[in-house]
Length: 496
Length: 107
Ligand SMILES: [Zn+2]
Image (cartoon, each protein chain N blue to C red):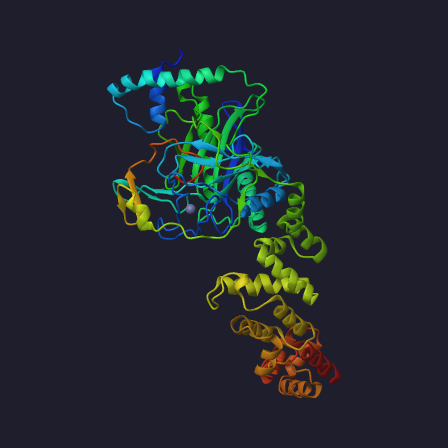
């Protein structure tokens, strides 16, 4: 929509002689990975039939009383600790009052002035540190569906699911910052087990706050953007909204200037649109919830949870490169999912071959998981365990099996769950090392290929491939290629 | 300009999604005013040394285990609703019509 282009990587925009600086903050709602809801014992699973996971508490029946889920507090504390936040020893819950069909009590239970934690943040790969202002616990709302006819349909299954809402300081400046922050936050929530953070299931949802100001001047009115259900939408919305605001400020008519409002991102059109003007907004009349006693988080509990935290992905990536000699790319692939990283570490430890373990996992194993030859779609579902893969790596290292045979064994291990050694013997795939047998095949290959031998003798070592082929074929692919090559060279030179 | 009792009543009704006719507003405004005046009396008390009472009990840190329990049947829930449709609760079309909280996300 605009001819405005950022000036360099730091995303400052030049317009009519003014340098405009974008200021971006992010709010993320993440569903905690509990079995039951926050304040009632309803199980919750996304995608269930509407209104089948409900009880008097989460449907707001008169007289129903909420009870806090201990697991929600525990997971929230874990996330806070992984993000370096300070967990408050005591915090309380408040009612945020508003009338809407997805919130049957007419208030949401949340934390207003005493969030369970404050501070912390995430260091991005670019070096930028994004500070967290706070994280608080709250309950999710139900779902209102507007696209089925002349009414709004309400499903209360999601009402009451525990959420943590994390709010950053406005420390971000570019769409890339936003994507990097969200990626890192999501990764940490998944690693700590606090949330599955599946965006498609709505377990991880973000809103963006954006303002722009001339460099060196005070910050200006901020606009909130909602309806961002993917990282690419977040980036696209920022790319649209920043130039929009700059052009709006450049207008000589103050009526055109940005106003404090909520805008929705229209994915199809790639633009942000103002939500209908809302009278009386921000009048949520917060007050302490009288039904829920304050929560206490003792220091001993915090220390216990801290000791249970897994090593976080950024730390793992660094260690894989530093101690195990993996490339940055491979370390990145392995740590994308905690289960894959754990599988790799176990295999590397058992086999003593981190690089080989990495190659087999990133090439063969992850490919098999994304394909459809096997039923498993995640590494935990595999019948093949780290011990099995390390056994195969051992056979390879000892020269008992060649590369091609190893891949054959590997795919059988995936489908059958059987051990590598067993498959090897069953299929007779053992590599042939027997010198007498190999020499015989080599001599057969050399017979009638004197010109090839002459080429090799003249120094063209690549020509030896024309001799290796027949030997491998004669052996049914089982000859040890390293040995064959040695033998061929010896035979050729001995003939001198 | 200070808000008149009528303004406050209108705003409160709007927040509560109540549609009041002019007659109802005229009748309720003085009653509402009386309630607010009573709260002003309470607000005028000097409670500087008194700790706020946030709950009727002095319980702290009451939690339950994360064990699922059966809730209510959908049919029972929908029986209490004016317009059940296909397992959903149907309500008048509301898109964009309400102050939205941060929860719920999406639209
Ligand atoms: Zn419930």
